[in-house]
Length: 366
Ligand SMILES: *Cc1c(COP(=O)(O)O)cnc(C)c1O
Image (cartoon, rainbow, N blue to C red; front, side, top):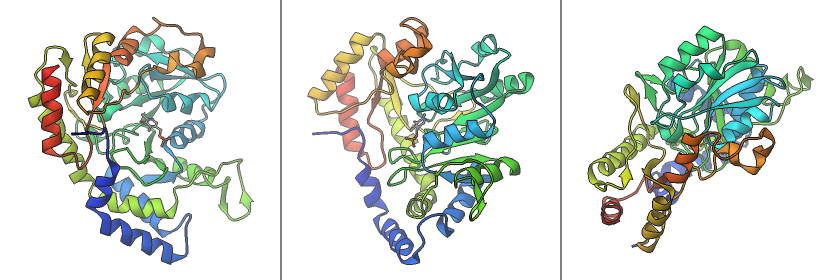
């Protein structure tokens, strides 16, 4: 049996008719950018997130850098972010000319809230939390720190659509919540897309203007903006998927539960859910005791036809792109250990019981 890491076709096939109808409807509307599909998707998704506003943009990275730009974050400012973030989270900071200040992750792969305060300086403007793998960060602690030190809170929810902490949606804690609709995400489009959610009327207005060349009325450009818009086709397709998101999420949670119950191997560390958190399992990331074990597990799984991925093998502070920050191996030992030992095993919508049984058996035989 050949088991791939993720098969997006299955999820398309499941709701094929609805997607195809949405495409036809959009094509026949004769209107392809900033139209009614986007408007209604934005309203539906804001409601879903428990936020007042949702503004569609062109990608998750755009959501991040635009969010921080809108908060006035730029050169000379510092933003605190966990050291095991995806590189795009960090780029959202540095595109604005600001400096990322890394904090080690905790055992749930979120920012270790107990290590944030020692990193706050007079230049700190915001904390960017990343709800990695769909596991929410410790939002009680983080929001408390933000209040105490008067810092902005931005959430990278690219992997956490529908995840909650103490019953509250990720994305609704921060000043701004940033989502990606990249096809592999839990709420994935069929191309690039993203959005920003917020409660502030002022931020909503300024983001809407900024994403469209700084213009609210045609030819009236009030700020130097950008072109970052979620197109009508993607919005129409996302509306279809949003309707099924609960079902899509529950399927992932169910697969995770079967892994939790089925994997029995002393060499494997299973992911843990944060108390009070609802994890939506964008990834099911297991870990081994050391890097050598992880690498031989990858090989063993491959020999048995099972494909895996690593999220992420190189932490941002060790990537060539951030060489200029001057970090070296050993700067963030916990994040580096995670990079060496984590492994994402197959979890996706349409993943069958038979396939999962094979994966579990092979892992248990390792
Ligand atoms: C996917 C992802 C992004 C970037 O989203 P794009 O839509 O690919 O730009 C940012 N942060 C995290 C945590 C992600 O997983």
